[in-house]
Length: 239
Image (cartoon, rainbow, N blue to C red; front, side, top):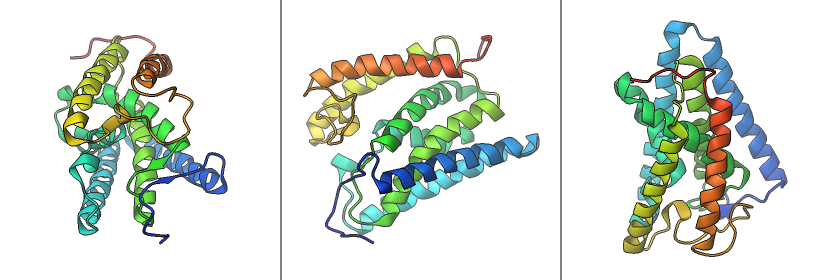
């Protein structure tokens, strides 16, 4: 345990801690995907549910610990940050009917991969407080929101549809508008749409609302890039 008076923690880019942590996260992603790839077909869905239970466990322990430490606040702990939403999708997507998973999968594929990579390379831990659990939980969650959708695509036959990129981009904009209003009510900064995050990030340009306009451009480019990499060779109608 480190100094418990530290509430926020930003891991300096290319520092020793950053290099070691990123190496561990990348290793975890590859291990998760490798193990899943090697499993027989009849166990692949059970493996996805096992990963979901791990995410649920971390979610419950995280919020329980925050409550017990007196650190849980309505303006900080609602799971409506982009990566938190992706994490929640990982928790329950395997427990809903298959025909209702498509949009959730697409949202997770784009937002989990983009948000997870960004958070891992420019990490800002809002609830660190010197507790190692929060450090581990932060990087585990972001590793999983990258690995989980890739696993679903590669092993459980879930595919991106032709206009999935557009649906996700529209959904993000609607979510951003709603969260700006929620932040104004709660005095919060969910998804960092009211105040830019306090971390060095090349995509954060200027103050509010200038950096949001830049985000619109950068996010669209990233979504299209992920679409080009992750789309199937031929599109089939998704029921």
